[in-house]
Amino acid sequence: MIDDRHTQAPASEGLRVSLQRVSRFFKPEKPALFDVSLDIAPGEFLYVAGTSGAGKSTLLKLLHLSESPDTGTLCFNGHDVAGLTRKVVAVLRRSMGVVFQDFKLIEDLSVASNIALALEVRGASPAMIRWRVAEVLAEVGLNGKEKELAGALSGGEQQRVAIARAIAPNPQLILADEPTGSLDTYSANFVLDMLEKVNARGATVVVATHDRMLMAARPHRTVVLDAGRAVGISQNGDFRSRSERRKTNLEEAV
Image (cartoon, rainbow, N blue to C red; front, top):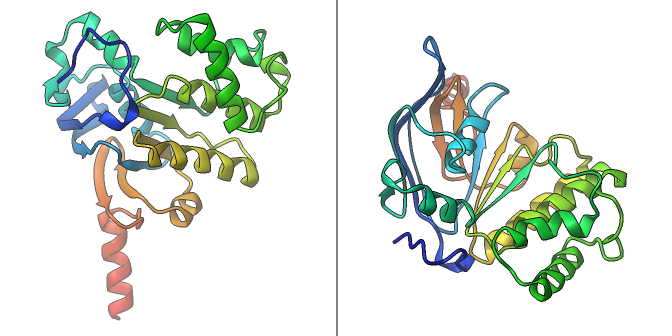
């Protein structure tokens, strides 16, 4: 049940997400998403795979409720978002954390202030904000960086701040859009370590990525998008589409 009396719920409660035949059109002849059906269980770690333009970012925007389906239904805990009030949608969005490839930090604010913003909008007290900011900075290995300007940090450090900001409110759902795309191998592994750690604590994590090596090294259930369509779903980290798997099977048979 989605309850607008609460602005935050512990990650362990989870969110069950269901898309049924969802489409999103920006151009009538070229849908960003077309007829996608997908269920995401509470506490799941899911990859959304595909090349650039496959529809990964659009899917994450729908999950974040910053875009709406043109057709089909999107449900959270059994509730069609089309029937929810703006107040309930706002509460639902506050149960999410988002990590972007380009960080989206406010570069002329301090590291601590960037993280604090995610807590302030949820009504946390100043004392709680100070405690939680210090806690998540320690978790992402940025002790002593609180007063530095976000724009003065390296790319890897900025992504750590972005993760700290996303996890600070203890969200039920983490959406990460190509979170390792601009990072070196060490920083990319750190990002995945953090996302898997948050997932182990009960949060649902959805990661959009085109990095096949990353998915192969850290297998999770994967939905593959191609030109806006879900062309394959894997339970075991085999992120190829159905056509790719059929081709491999035929080659092995001969």
